[in-house]
Structures are given as C-alpha cells and as structure tokens.
View 1 (cartoon, rainbow, N blue to C red):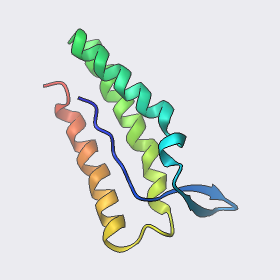
View 2 (view 1 turned 30 degrees about the vertical axis):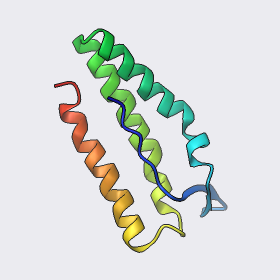
View 3 (view 1 turned 90 degrees about the vertical axis):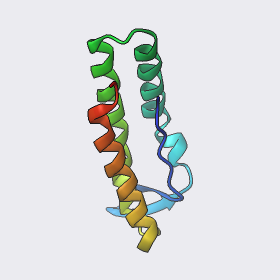
Length: 98
C-alpha cells in the first residue's frame, strides 16, 4: 500500500524565498517511485527487512515533501491540511506492515 500525498502547490528554494510551481510531482518522482517499489517488494515478500525498507523509503518521501509546505502560496486551511496530511502519513509508518 503506497500512499501518495498530493498538494496543490509546490516550492523550490530560490534565493532563500520559496517560489511555487506545479512541478512537485516531477520533482519528487524518484522518491515516490522508491516508495512504490519498496511497497511492491514488501507485498511480494513480507519479510522484516522488506518492511523496514518500505518504511524507510516512505519516511524519505515524507521528508522530501515537508519543505514544500513553506510555499508562500500555500496558506490558511491549505497549509494546515498539507501539514496534517504529512503528519498522518508519518504516524501511519508505525503500523505500515501490520
């Protein structure tokens, strides 16, 4: 079960001021692919090692998404929802392979 988090905006640091773009999906494709691959590997062989790899890749994806929450266009409830989604995803890692 790979969970893909989505947001309406994304950012890159440019002169220390986040600039928003809609390319976040492309920018994080490698991290997402790693989560999907690890999830498929675990689904086919539910070993402890594969579970740990899955959790590690999932955490790396969440960590890569976190800076996008600094986007100046992500405000109000959108920012709250974005952060809550990341927090929920991070909490789900604990029971990911149960």
